[in-house]
Length: 440
Image (cartoon, rainbow, N blue to C red; front, side, top):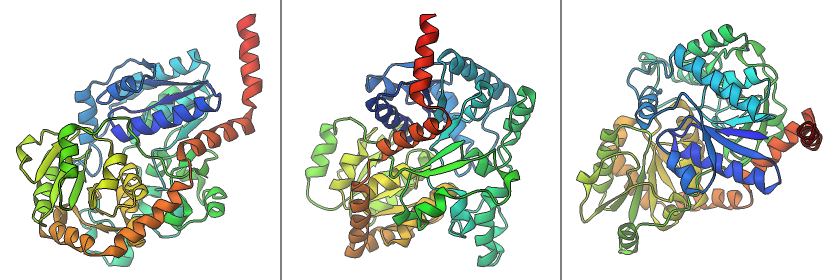
């Protein structure tokens, strides 16, 4: 049994986990989903997938609070979980994993899985870091951020800012303090740095060399230069794009808006403050285009007008092929959904990983990267007009789309998981042992 443990406060993570779950089961591998509950729990129900809800349960309000405390969302990010919460979450998960006789746990941003997997004595498989990985940092590929976590950084020389952008994740210990404290209490391996927090024993790198600029051989042969910054024996595997394909209809109001003449810009910035989304919509509309907004959890009905359509949770993989361009924060799921449709975009990164995702597309000519401040005003209006007037941007996005079209990302995730576990102990032997134990 492989247990998937998504943080359902994130729509993108919930849908990615569903895709991996289905791909595993399509290959005859036993897989189940467990969660502490939250905002997008209904997505699991709507997909017709049974799942277990573990205590302590996270309400939608607690999920929203968690997201507000993240870097890029909070002006002054705070600890995402208290020591008491992490302790309770990890113990409950470990008990569930033992009860399920799990061979591995797959997670995104359920941080307590870093501890519960060790308590249960099984590997942790992670997908939430995308391609924001050490081999890229060691080559100095991470861009100077548009919004540095260090208030003084903008006064430093560009070369030093780039060094900080690439060395920071490997050395930063922010947000790992509570994890380390609980790890010591439980007698399991800790989480030394931000880079280690983003990785598992097996890390599924959900991207392609053609976009990242790092070859398959270089990434998959990578070993830590300084093991102190990582957990024991991390393994990286390229698996290709992994993004949401929600099985949702396009609402009638949105369908009518899409069919009307004139260029449409799709604004899909979800895990961000409501005020930012509203300012971005106004700046985009000033470019003389019509705007479709994926509001998800935000109350944005006040933006409605003949030129602005506000939807809820929308099937973005069906929307991007029908619009002129997108405006997104830069989570890998959103970036890949746009690129898979051959749609250029403006990115407003709010976190270091998003800076990297947008920069990779920008380097290929398929995107423009703006700071949050720029995204709220005239720079956004100008960027929209620039991309609309630059056919090469759509051509560049189309080239990436052609690469993505050849790859079954969820299928490769499943294969990487199976191959990793087979190398440790064949799944067939484990299943036979389970059967013998059940018979006894």
